[in-house]
Length: 136
Image 1 (cartoon, rainbow, N blue to C red):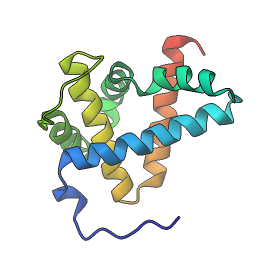
Image 2: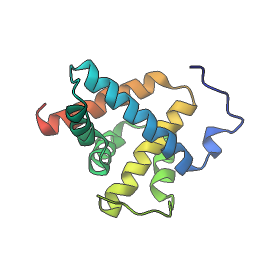
Image 3: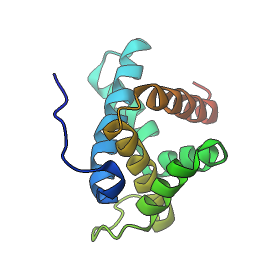
């Protein structure tokens, strides 16, 4: 599948749009990672994926990554964190929800800028953070 060119500058894109794209990108990477590790039963995959994609997990990933982010990345994180979504967190407190949105905005921003290598670096770190917590 070929990526269509957007006429918008990712720096000017609404952070909630970046988070929307980042959520899908991150979920795709998590699912691929789990399948590559040998998980093949749908129920097993769903339960394992939830550990990575929960707001609490994403907020924790972001907090661990913050010292290593560039100035531009921190700026996007702040925009994502401060964005008013109009929806409320279903299974998370508001702080975790905001930080999860910020993490997703960062991933969406990197994706729109064609920074696949940087996304891969962040994914490796994210998986290590989640797996280190759970001992998997």
